[in-house]
Amino acid sequence: MRYDRITVNPDQMGGVPCLRGLRIPVATVVAMIADGMSVDEILRAYPDLHRDDITEALRYAAEAVRERELPLVNLA
Image (cartoon, rainbow, N blue to C red; front, side, top):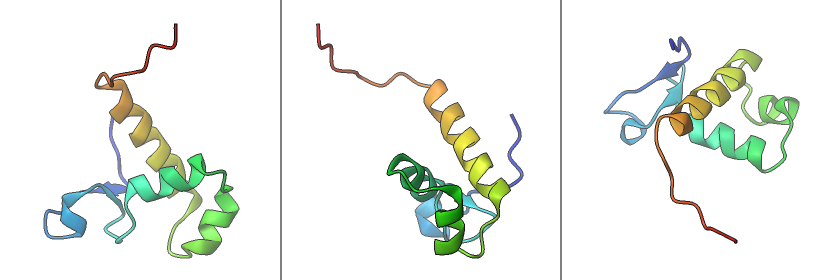
């Protein structure tokens, strides 16, 4: 999968994936969605972002989770 809006620069933000070279980590945007913020609220909080940035951040996060197994608590 190709990501045009996700950048990784070892000299910026510790090399974590960010959006379009901005100092806005993908994880920050995904966490905001997880915390219940709407896309419009995120765009107001980060006026440099575009709606497509948020969509791509979510696609990137989904792919990252798909690529590895995480330990889950067995509630049974």
